[in-house]
Image 1 (spheres, helix red, strand yellow):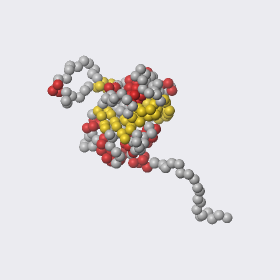
Image 2: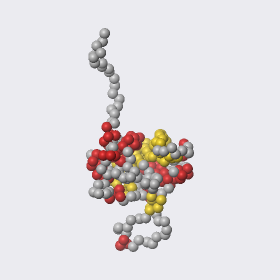
Image 3: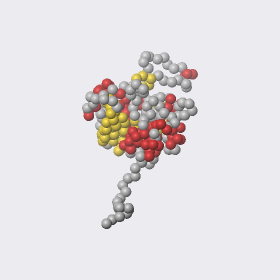
Image 4: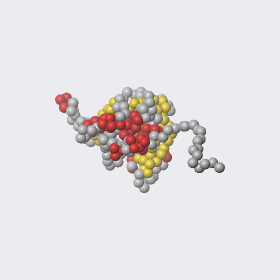
Length: 257
């Protein structure tokens, strides 16, 4: 009869090591610099994982905000870059800013954060990034904006150009998604991934997911927010070289979100 106190030993092959401690490490309650839409730890880690953030890769967030997605990409070893049209990303508040978060978590600083507009992006038209991660702004708290004027404007005098802040106008979800997919098709390296959140309603149909001839849909997961509204975690992979004659197809149903 085997002694119940005897230790059991089993042989096996170790395949993975869990990293659940990262949920506590990136908990928003402990973060120094936050914005109204800073992404929670679990979702930002999932997105970085879906985007295959790893050592030797370069990942970009075109709506960087307070840097939630870049922080987790950097934690997985990726070099990072970001862009945002909102200058508050760079100015910070009460002595803290996006860079403070990178110091707090002791992860490598981004190679660069650029004040730019996705609809008029400043990047050269060639493959640069191994991954693009995005939580596009939509809704009441963080409605999307792009450069533009609601009415005709007079030319800005030369002496005022240095400190001039360009005007902005609303950026529709349909237009924003179209620009995001076109940007990814152009700037992702072959096999690179685009991972983003897509707002949907209870009337969602699979055809509502934006598409591009250069990008293949490889994952689509729903995150229920309310009975009517959801957001879906979309993962796409670049499968064909970029062609300027090809553009994204975006359902007009997204205009209702």
